[in-house]
Amino acid sequence: LAQINGNLDNLLAEAKRRGAFLYAPQTNAGWASAVITDRVMTMVDQALAGHDVDADRLYATGLSMGGGGTWNLLNRYGTRFAAGIPICGVAPSSDFVPARLIDQAIAVFHARNDTVVSHVTSRNVINSILTAAQESLPTYPPVRSSSNFEFSSPALDLHYVEPATGGHGIWSAVYSTPPLYDWLFSHTLAVPEPSALIGALAGLSLIGFPRPLRRRRVPC
Image 1: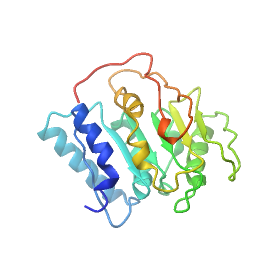
Image 2: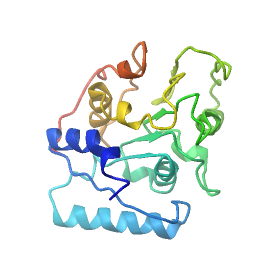
Image 3: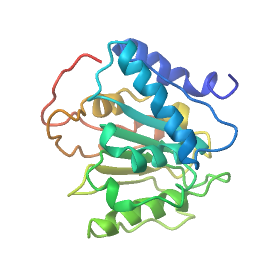
Image 4: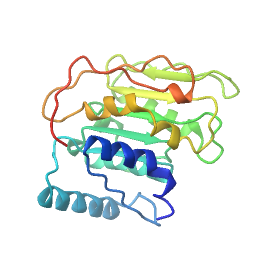
Protein backbone atom coordinates (compact mmCIF):
# COMPACT_ATOMS: atom_id res chain seq x y z
CA LEU A 1 0.00 0.00 0.00
CA ALA A 2 2.95 2.34 0.54
CA GLN A 3 3.45 2.51 -3.23
CA ILE A 4 -0.14 3.39 -4.09
CA ASN A 5 -1.10 5.75 -1.28
CA GLY A 6 0.05 9.34 -2.00
CA ASN A 7 1.62 8.39 -5.34
CA LEU A 8 -1.67 7.65 -7.09
CA ASP A 9 -4.08 9.96 -5.27
CA ASN A 10 -4.53 12.31 -8.24
CA LEU A 11 -4.77 9.44 -10.71
CA LEU A 12 -7.39 7.71 -8.57
CA ALA A 13 -9.37 10.92 -8.16
CA GLU A 14 -9.46 11.46 -11.91
CA ALA A 15 -10.44 7.84 -12.55
CA LYS A 16 -13.35 8.25 -10.15
CA ARG A 17 -14.36 11.54 -11.71
CA ARG A 18 -14.46 10.01 -15.18
CA GLY A 19 -16.07 6.74 -14.10
CA ALA A 20 -13.05 4.60 -14.99
CA PHE A 21 -11.70 1.49 -13.33
CA LEU A 22 -8.17 1.73 -11.89
CA TYR A 23 -6.06 -1.38 -11.44
CA ALA A 24 -2.73 -0.88 -9.62
CA PRO A 25 -0.70 -4.12 -9.69
CA GLN A 26 2.32 -4.36 -7.40
CA THR A 27 5.59 -6.28 -7.58
CA ASN A 28 8.74 -6.40 -5.50
CA ALA A 29 10.67 -8.13 -8.30
CA GLY A 30 10.46 -5.50 -11.05
CA TRP A 31 8.50 -5.64 -14.29
CA ALA A 32 11.11 -7.26 -16.52
CA SER A 33 9.67 -10.76 -16.33
CA ALA A 34 7.07 -11.65 -18.94
CA VAL A 35 5.55 -13.98 -16.35
CA ILE A 36 4.72 -11.00 -14.13
CA THR A 37 3.27 -8.90 -16.93
CA ASP A 38 1.30 -11.93 -18.13
CA ARG A 39 -0.23 -12.12 -14.65
CA VAL A 40 -1.19 -8.45 -14.90
CA MET A 41 -2.97 -9.09 -18.17
CA THR A 42 -4.71 -12.12 -16.68
CA MET A 43 -6.20 -9.82 -14.03
CA VAL A 44 -7.14 -7.29 -16.71
CA ASP A 45 -8.96 -10.03 -18.62
CA GLN A 46 -10.78 -11.05 -15.45
CA ALA A 47 -11.89 -7.43 -15.03
CA LEU A 48 -13.10 -7.37 -18.62
CA ALA A 49 -15.08 -10.54 -18.02
CA GLY A 50 -16.56 -9.51 -14.69
CA HIS A 51 -17.16 -5.77 -15.05
CA ASP A 52 -18.46 -3.30 -17.61
CA VAL A 53 -15.01 -2.36 -18.92
CA ASP A 54 -14.47 -1.07 -22.45
CA ALA A 55 -11.76 -3.30 -23.95
CA ASP A 56 -11.01 -0.64 -26.58
CA ARG A 57 -10.05 1.91 -23.94
CA LEU A 58 -7.39 0.31 -21.77
CA TYR A 59 -4.54 2.63 -20.75
CA ALA A 60 -1.21 1.89 -19.09
CA THR A 61 0.72 4.29 -16.89
CA GLY A 62 3.36 3.94 -14.22
CA LEU A 63 6.13 5.77 -12.43
CA SER A 64 9.78 4.94 -11.83
CA MET A 65 10.03 1.12 -11.87
CA GLY A 66 6.39 1.17 -12.97
CA GLY A 67 7.37 3.50 -15.80
CA GLY A 68 9.62 0.74 -17.09
CA GLY A 69 6.72 -1.64 -16.54
CA THR A 70 4.57 0.61 -18.71
CA TRP A 71 7.13 0.35 -21.51
CA ASN A 72 7.06 -3.44 -21.14
CA LEU A 73 3.26 -3.60 -21.24
CA LEU A 74 3.12 -1.44 -24.36
CA ASN A 75 5.86 -3.54 -25.95
CA ARG A 76 4.35 -6.94 -25.14
CA TYR A 77 0.65 -6.16 -25.39
CA GLY A 78 0.55 -2.99 -27.45
CA THR A 79 -2.51 -4.08 -29.39
CA ARG A 80 -4.45 -4.18 -26.13
CA PHE A 81 -3.76 -0.60 -25.00
CA ALA A 82 -5.10 2.58 -26.58
CA ALA A 83 -2.43 4.82 -24.98
CA GLY A 84 0.32 4.86 -22.37
CA ILE A 85 2.02 7.32 -20.02
CA PRO A 86 5.46 6.28 -18.69
CA ILE A 87 6.72 8.68 -16.01
CA CYS A 88 10.43 8.86 -15.05
CA GLY A 89 10.63 5.21 -16.04
CA VAL A 90 13.52 2.80 -15.81
CA ALA A 91 14.69 1.19 -19.04
CA PRO A 92 12.42 -1.41 -20.64
CA SER A 93 13.37 -5.08 -20.69
CA SER A 94 15.76 -6.70 -23.14
CA ASP A 95 12.87 -7.93 -25.30
CA PHE A 96 11.85 -4.35 -26.09
CA VAL A 97 11.28 -3.83 -29.83
CA PRO A 98 10.88 -0.10 -30.63
CA ALA A 99 9.08 -0.79 -33.91
CA ARG A 100 6.17 -2.28 -31.98
CA LEU A 101 5.41 1.15 -30.49
CA ILE A 102 5.41 3.19 -33.71
CA ASP A 103 1.62 3.22 -33.88
CA GLN A 104 1.09 3.55 -30.14
CA ALA A 105 -0.09 6.78 -28.48
CA ILE A 106 2.48 7.61 -25.81
CA ALA A 107 3.18 10.61 -23.56
CA VAL A 108 6.46 10.44 -21.65
CA PHE A 109 7.51 12.61 -18.70
CA HIS A 110 10.96 12.79 -17.11
CA ALA A 111 12.63 15.64 -15.21
CA ARG A 112 16.13 16.55 -16.29
CA ASN A 113 17.39 16.81 -12.71
CA ASP A 114 16.16 13.33 -11.75
CA THR A 115 18.97 11.78 -9.70
CA VAL A 116 17.27 8.40 -9.21
CA VAL A 117 16.55 7.45 -12.83
CA SER A 118 18.44 9.49 -15.41
CA HIS A 119 16.37 11.42 -17.94
CA VAL A 120 18.68 9.95 -20.57
CA THR A 121 16.82 6.67 -20.06
CA SER A 122 13.60 8.14 -21.44
CA ARG A 123 15.46 10.00 -24.18
CA ASN A 124 17.01 6.73 -25.33
CA VAL A 125 13.63 4.99 -25.57
CA ILE A 126 12.13 7.95 -27.44
CA ASN A 127 15.07 7.95 -29.84
CA SER A 128 14.77 4.21 -30.46
CA ILE A 129 11.09 4.54 -31.42
CA LEU A 130 11.77 7.49 -33.71
CA THR A 131 14.68 5.65 -35.33
CA ALA A 132 12.49 2.61 -35.93
CA ALA A 133 9.94 4.90 -37.59
CA GLN A 134 12.70 6.57 -39.64
CA GLU A 135 11.85 9.92 -38.08
CA SER A 136 14.28 12.68 -37.14
CA LEU A 137 15.49 12.82 -33.56
CA PRO A 138 14.85 15.91 -31.46
CA THR A 139 17.62 18.25 -30.42
CA TYR A 140 17.62 17.95 -26.65
CA PRO A 141 18.84 20.73 -24.35
CA PRO A 142 22.10 20.25 -22.45
CA VAL A 143 21.87 18.67 -19.03
CA ARG A 144 22.50 21.96 -17.22
CA SER A 145 19.89 23.89 -19.17
CA SER A 146 17.25 25.66 -17.09
CA SER A 147 14.66 25.48 -19.86
CA ASN A 148 11.80 23.01 -19.93
CA PHE A 149 11.70 20.86 -23.06
CA GLU A 150 8.78 19.41 -24.99
CA PHE A 151 8.61 17.38 -28.15
CA SER A 152 5.84 15.97 -30.31
CA SER A 153 6.59 13.85 -33.32
CA PRO A 154 4.83 15.26 -36.39
CA ALA A 155 4.28 11.73 -37.71
CA LEU A 156 3.60 9.74 -34.55
CA ASP A 157 1.34 10.21 -31.55
CA LEU A 158 4.51 10.32 -29.45
CA HIS A 159 5.11 13.13 -26.96
CA TYR A 160 7.91 13.88 -24.53
CA VAL A 161 7.96 16.46 -21.74
CA GLU A 162 11.22 17.08 -19.88
CA PRO A 163 10.93 19.70 -17.12
CA ALA A 164 14.25 21.18 -16.08
CA THR A 165 13.41 20.60 -12.42
CA GLY A 166 11.13 18.42 -10.35
CA GLY A 167 13.49 15.62 -9.45
CA HIS A 168 12.30 12.04 -9.45
CA GLY A 169 8.91 12.66 -7.87
CA ILE A 170 7.15 14.47 -10.70
CA TRP A 171 4.20 12.08 -10.88
CA SER A 172 1.97 14.05 -8.53
CA ALA A 173 2.21 17.08 -10.81
CA VAL A 174 1.75 15.01 -13.96
CA TYR A 175 -1.26 13.16 -12.55
CA SER A 176 -2.86 16.42 -11.45
CA THR A 177 -3.01 17.86 -14.98
CA PRO A 178 -6.58 17.60 -16.36
CA PRO A 179 -5.67 18.22 -20.05
CA LEU A 180 -3.46 15.13 -19.92
CA TYR A 181 -6.55 13.04 -19.16
CA ASP A 182 -8.43 14.68 -22.02
CA TRP A 183 -5.66 13.42 -24.28
CA LEU A 184 -5.56 9.98 -22.66
CA PHE A 185 -9.28 9.26 -22.53
CA SER A 186 -9.83 10.47 -26.09
CA HIS A 187 -7.91 7.47 -27.40
CA THR A 188 -9.63 4.26 -28.35
CA LEU A 189 -8.72 1.21 -30.40
CA ALA A 190 -12.13 1.34 -32.06
CA VAL A 191 -11.33 4.15 -34.52
CA PRO A 192 -8.17 5.74 -35.95
CA GLU A 193 -6.85 8.41 -33.61
CA PRO A 194 -5.45 11.82 -34.58
CA SER A 195 -2.05 12.87 -33.35
CA ALA A 196 -2.35 15.38 -30.51
CA LEU A 197 0.30 18.04 -30.07
CA ILE A 198 1.69 19.17 -26.74
CA GLY A 199 0.62 22.64 -25.66
CA ALA A 200 3.04 25.38 -24.70
CA LEU A 201 4.91 24.48 -21.54
CA ALA A 202 5.50 27.32 -19.12
CA GLY A 203 6.22 25.09 -16.12
CA LEU A 204 5.51 21.63 -14.78
CA SER A 205 2.16 22.70 -13.36
CA LEU A 206 1.08 23.81 -16.85
CA ILE A 207 1.93 20.62 -18.70
CA GLY A 208 -0.96 19.89 -21.00
CA PHE A 209 -2.23 18.52 -24.25
CA PRO A 210 -4.92 20.28 -26.28
CA ARG A 211 -7.98 18.25 -27.16
CA PRO A 212 -7.59 16.13 -30.31
CA LEU A 213 -9.40 17.29 -33.42
CA ARG A 214 -12.09 14.71 -32.92
CA ARG A 215 -13.21 12.63 -29.96
CA ARG A 216 -15.29 9.53 -29.68
CA ARG A 217 -17.15 9.24 -26.41
CA VAL A 218 -17.31 5.64 -25.25
CA PRO A 219 -18.36 4.53 -21.75
CA CYS A 220 -15.34 3.60 -19.67
